[in-house]
Amino acid sequence: MYNDKMLENINTKIESLSFSVKNQLSFNKMIETQITQIAAAIPVDHSGKSLGQPDDSLENVHVAANQTRRKSLARRIKNVESLPKVNQ
Image 1 (cartoon, rainbow, N blue to C red):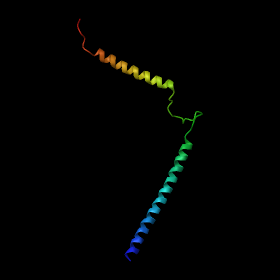
Image 2: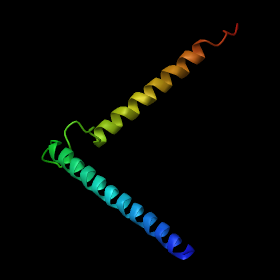
Image 3: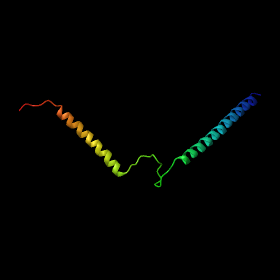
Image 4: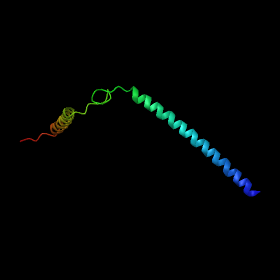
């Protein structure tokens, strides 16, 4: 009698787990479908990049590096100019 009750309890838990797994699979499929639809709606140019994606050409990398160097140099000059003057 005790074993019957235990088996019934185990069976109930397995059914509940099975139901949860089926729900999760259904949810995953729904999300996969939505992601596929979103990906299909993103415009892509002839190079395969999506429009609005930043241009990472070497020229832009050089421009960004030069801007950083100029800002750094300007800060150093400002720091030197703020030092107290030495009388000669």
